[in-house]
Image (tube, rainbow, N blue to C red):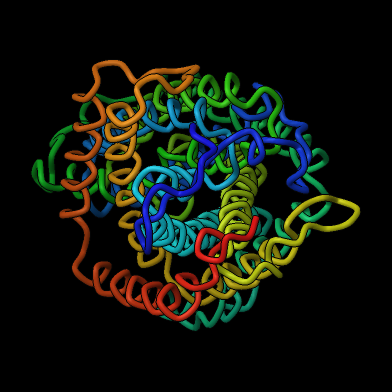
Length: 470
């Protein structure tokens, strides 16, 4: 991309990405290879979607059609994933959709998507932590250990519930691990991803022998609209490649490895999602699925309670990778925004020894802990999806604009079927947004307005493009 100064003025000024921005002088270390990047992507995609949300959506929203919900969400996600892959090969810089929007659509669009993603990623971290807490409680019940009700869930989620202590502590634990350094954290992430994939494969292989066709009828107990609403709800479970792409400046040969990792992680995850959801709703009627520990309870219902315990252990260990990936993503987006001057540069200072943006990481860890401890999982899950869907709209539109504005720019990956594929990503994303609850729009609107105020009072005047610094 051109290294010339921004071509537009005011809030439409565009961030130039050139050799200087892509160098190793950013304070972050390049230490992630293709399979570590793919593991981060799988770590983000496979987790609460299978172990928690699949059961909740099947029970409350879609019934056996939860499999179709994941297919619909996956199609929408795939169109955006291809656009992400092309951008990742062109702009291997931290920030993901924020950076892509800033470089193509201008500063204000980039700011809004970055501000949006900070909220969404933090909410996702909270959702996943709550999901892990549910399986942890299942394990405690299996060994006959009953803990006080006040510490087992957010207010309104059960009798006597005051705070989900386990969920909150998990958020703080992941913040601590991330601050030890990206190389050490990535090693732990890769090992845990393999454990998680082994558990998911075991669920599919063992569970297929306990499928009863009668459990698939009726397939649409909530109507086809239930499957659509389910797709909007589970959507956050199929876009983890976005979190992985935020680590561009910490990856080796990012131009080639990032596009490959994005496509690989989504393809593997969608096959596993489809098979696992089919097994879950085939083993047990959707009416009897336990929404907090779906697979463990399903196997217990067919007399395999021991295997259910193994699944619960695998879920607790494996879903930790989702927390890792999204907290990594949130902290790198915050780092990129601050480095560009749209938020105070104090947040862009990396740790002297570990070379990570430790300040944003700890703040995100604390805020997500508060959300995980005090907000019900359904409320937090819906909040995540509207922002991510809007990010997808921005990325898909931006890749079309970029292809026509700068067709000769070097690309290590090209979206096939241009402009139809990214256009489908826009249509699917907008459609899924319309399926979300109105209350979600209100919460997001409040955050959006706050972001506009911060940009007007600080970012517009202090950004590096405005001041000519950097």
